Image 1 (cartoon, rainbow, N blue to C red):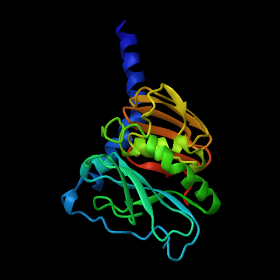
Image 2 (image 1 turned 180 degrees about the vertical axis):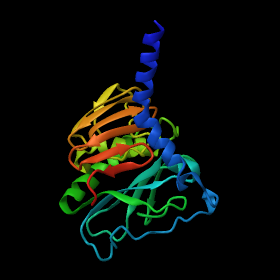
Image 3 (image 1 turned 120 degrees about the vertical axis):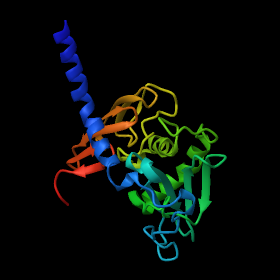
Image 4 (image 1 turned 60 degrees about the vertical axis):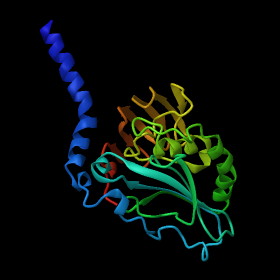
Length: 250
């Protein structure tokens, strides 16, 4: 009997390693340190979004940046910025935990630092496809059911909101990185739903565990908000803490 218990424990430990080991290594990195308080950190623009006075076409960008302090070893904060065709400024949609209501819509701040961390572009769509997305965006945002509710883990949080937009607007073809903790919280309280990209399906137990299979995401396994998996399209590992790790150097 004890032999079976040892085997089960060994299987359990081996199953947890792909989630725990990368996260522990990530936590030991510089993301676990904070040199200043979040309120006095950088929030200025990075100018990764095209100048609206130069770019006449519609623009849709999903961006993400590491969160402040030790939390940055686990998670990023994501948002979406859009510029309609011919517009002279961006509109930014995001959920922020310390604001009330949490759902925030601002003008003119598309690509700012987040708590001192430089963001990166997760998705960038221009032209007619961007116009289609922008036309759908406002009613989808309005229908988001957690405008005044926020739970950092397992959700609903900022990443749950952006994932919700991806599921509702498949034209985004959105594949959020493993570090977008909360992305696997199915906002509409279902066990089975669409993959965030709209190219497959997802099983999620209230964000605590599950599975995603899609042509954009590849295969992902979820446990306690952490994600590990493999993207066949890009030959990329998906690891907790590190995000997307290409198998072939680019």
